[in-house]
Amino acid sequence: MSTRVEQYRSAVLTTANQLTILRIVFVPVFIILLAYGEIGWALSTFVAAGITDVLDGVIARRFGQKTSIGAVLDPLADKLLMTSSILILSLPQMEFHNTIPRWLLIVVVFRDVFILLVSLIVVLMVGWRVFTPSPYGKASTALQVFTVLGVLYSNWQHVAVPELNVLFYMTGLMTAFSGLHYLVRGLRHWQSHD
Image 1 (tube, one colour):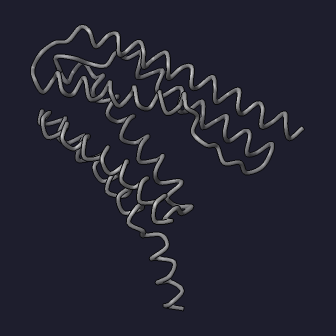
Image 2 (image 1 turned 135 degrees about the vertical axis):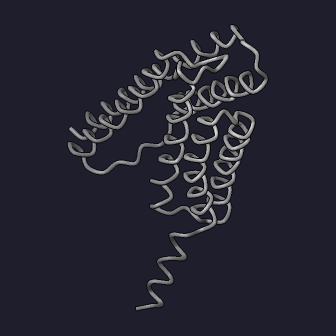
């Protein structure tokens, strides 16, 4: 029995999954640092979290460490970090030089909830499906990361950067478009089943 538990533990606690768990731990650290105005350390934590994201993906693929728990934890870690980052950086009471507009926060949160609901409906109607990330979803995530980095860096430098508005609109448009693209993919899954 103990051998079986050890095998299960080693399968779950792979190096890739440990890095993902570390990224989840970074989230409250990042929030606390921002809340106390330690923007430089918050920026460093965000970058460190991004590095663990890249590393866990490379390790999982290269060393055959893909697990079912990793498939759940990895996107969860990403969503926790991105949503909390965009939420805190959109709060006017934080008195940052640059804030993420609330409309962008709403678009990002609505898109994630929308994708979750579409996925749930498809799974309930059709059965379990693996939804691979679309190129538009990846582009949306990349733009969100650049947005957070841009806002964090400019706040760390104590300068207002009006040009960030261009990045906000690009991120908002790509986020909304990727949400619609996931809807189309969900409908295709449903129609192919019928």
